[in-house]
Image (cartoon, rainbow, N blue to C red):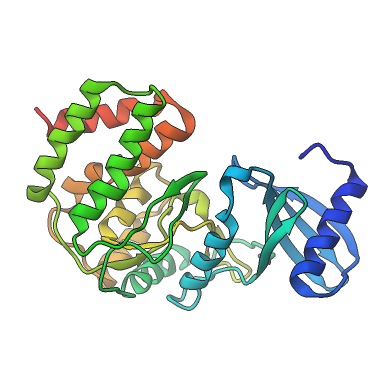
Length: 297
C-alpha cells in the first residue's frame, strides 16, 4: 500500500495524529482496511484509543477530505443514524488525510433495517430553502457541483445529468447521438419528475456506505451531501440492491413518498449510472441507454 516502508507509515500516522490531536500517541498496531478505489485506509490502535485514518496523494483531489468532514458534520445529529466522530483532516508531505473515530462493527440487531428506514426519513426532514449546498464536494473521485438552485429540475439537469454526460463525451465514452438523446430527455423531465422541498441527503447512499455500528445499528459513512429531492436517494438504494424490504416499509411509514415513485426510479438513477460510466468505463453505459430508450422515443 502506498509504496512506503512500515517505519515511514508509522511516522506518517504519528505526524497526522499530532497535527490533529496535538499529542503524540504511540501507534501499537495498524490494520489496513478498505478505503474504496481512491484512498488507503488503516485502523490505528494507539495508547490513546483507536482511530480510523484514510489518505491519498492525488493532488487533483485537493479539498476532498475537508468537504467530507463538513458533510459528516452536517449528518451528525440530523437523524438517529450513527455517524463517526470527526477528529480532523490535514496534510503531511504529499498525503492528505482524514482522521475519524474507528467504529467497531458487531452483528446487526433484529430491528437494523427498520432503524435505517426511520433514520433516513428523519434525515430527510432536515430541509433548506434551495437545492444544493454552499460548497462543492465529491462523488467518488469526481467533483460534484452544488451551486444552489431554487428549482429541483434545473438543479438535477444542470448540476447532475449535464455535468456527467459532458464528462463522458469529453472522455470519448459517448458520442453526439447520445448527447442529443440526453437533450431530448431534459425536455421531457418537467412532465416526469415532481418538485419537493429540498431535503438533506447522504448523497451516495449505496449498501457499501452503510455499516453496522458498535450497537448493531446503521452507521453512515463516505457521504456526498447536498440538499436535494429525497426521491433520488431512495432510488439509488435500489440500483445495486442490498437494502432489506423492511427498510423501505419503515421509511414509507415514517415519510410517505409521492405516488408513482417507482416509475421515476430509473430517471433518478441516470446520475449514479453516469458517474459510474465516468469512474469505471463503458460497462455501465448499457443501463443508461436502456433508460433513455424507455423515455426518449
